[in-house]
Image (cartoon, rainbow, N blue to C red):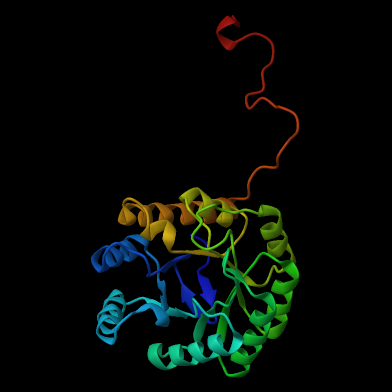
Length: 261
């Protein structure tokens, strides 16, 4: 594998980030996370239910030994997201926050204007923000201008499993922001989707539903782990250029060698 991934000064050997929701049971969640090889797990403070259930869940997460990336899933306003981020910092003892701010309930599309405002407030307050955003290049540029070292553009709307709906936009972001750490977040359904994102030069992927809602989450977590590694290795290996005209892979001259006496 090439050089390790660095997120806000923290070095990681795995380029797969994994979520902690929607698994059929806590035991399957734990085994799936282990099978993924991920070193970062995302956790939502708002979805732990009762205090007792929340404590049990939190203990499970702590037992994994992984770096926790709290998220603000389910927030619909700047104030709500900022408040929840501050609560997450107190609970999880980290300045990292995956900033989610939903602007449309139909496809759960991030609110680009609110996202910029919330990002500014959180960075001013010392947070290290990983904003979940669409594949809009201008919004991505503005998030970087605010101080984000990491961006998380979507592949497709959350939970759809549709893969990379706009490869052109994702490639453009990669090309225009060569020094920014980029993760594809949301919409992945198959390991091949993750491999494609990595082949495009994305630094990592984050997924949840694709593993948690698979028929065999543990096996699917392993499949995604292998796909992420394969995609990264392929990116580093540099693919051959595409051609418009066929070219034989074995040059031929004259007669076959068994006819040459």
